[in-house]
Length: 251
Image (tube, rainbow, N blue to C red; front, side):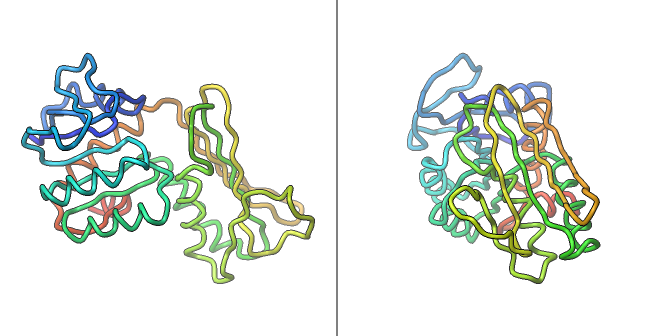
């Protein structure tokens, strides 16, 4: 039985992870860490990692970028692997995660959905076939409470596409502030926030007289939780290093 510490347990994704873990017999959430403190879970919730006394095998993190440093400190000091699902990390915070991976296994992904990772693979394949004759635009839609923009998933898609292009792609997030022709190496990334949209990502390939669109729609946060739990099992058995969804799916 794998003992899990759930970081950010009082958030919407935290609740989804708890629900997904309820009927599993291969892992158990033994405690949570959340700045809002106690809740009605059947496991203790602490405001700080410093208060954790349970024996923990792996951390699942759906929290806030501002809390990543505390997570990395605890994981390093206690040699606990971590599945980091929090998005919107800045360069300094990404460096912390990379440094942590030198000591323990770290699974880091902007999206835990199998479908999204298929979308990335299809986008890379389309890019390699269509070449520079097609302009690429990415549109992401999320609920009105999401803090970061663009989404970590949109950046994952753009990074995947960039891997198979040889023209040094440039990400363009907004065009209202300048007037100029679109360059061929641009990848446009656009964010929409509204209502209760769980998550939708579209990749548009616009060529001469034809348009190809690849779209993934998330209908429930449960799909992200259902991806995080297998990732925890995978990560807990790996040596120190940085892993992502492609590593898990290739096993």
